[in-house]
Image (cartoon, rainbow, N blue to C red; front, side):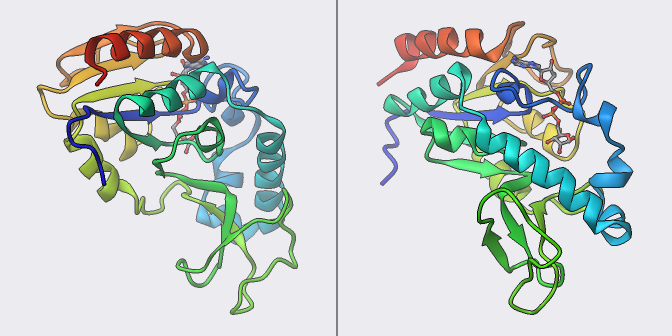
Length: 236
Ligand code: APR
């Protein structure tokens, strides 16, 4: 039973929260989209034209995720649950929030740990280890694809994510360039009375977003400080 006396915090995270765990972001220098063309690895067309290349790309990312560990930023977010109702709405497909101890994590763009049928989206499976192959089939016999939201595809978790953000007392935006929609639009539907923070080395004020404190810093350093401050100021 959710303890409604506790303030509700929604953490909206992006690739930057996992950067200090050794996982590359997408658009920073040396980022993933400098090494790979989105059209080759992250669209339904790419899967249709070259499933081998797409499978290899996500196998590599899955392997790297399994070798990585949550950092101080992830751990600080998990610590918030001791004093607040916390929902993490993440654009990330890694499982570092869960491994850090966060218990309510909503993945907008899918999960590397899962695969799904190429013919029935409702058939979702846990991936055993890091490698999917051409022989990995769903129960209907179709080739398993990564359980990832590719560019041009629907984002089914937007509705529950919007619900969470619209009830937030505190919104923490961390490690995201806010360049990808519809996810980035979430920051504009938080209630105006909601207290907002943007933690990112490149953080700036966001047009149309009020009550926003900008914290230009790396998550591993800035998040533990912010969490201590929030616990002192608003903890139960
Ligand atoms: N701590 C906090 N933020 C950081 C750190 C760090 N240590 N290092 C980098 N950043 C910030 C960068 O300044 C940048 O604003 O992380 C952000 C990463 O931005 P992107 O690479 O654009 O990643 P993200 O916003 O998560 O991308 C959104 O785009 O490619 C798609 O589906 C993919 O979910 C992804 C979506």
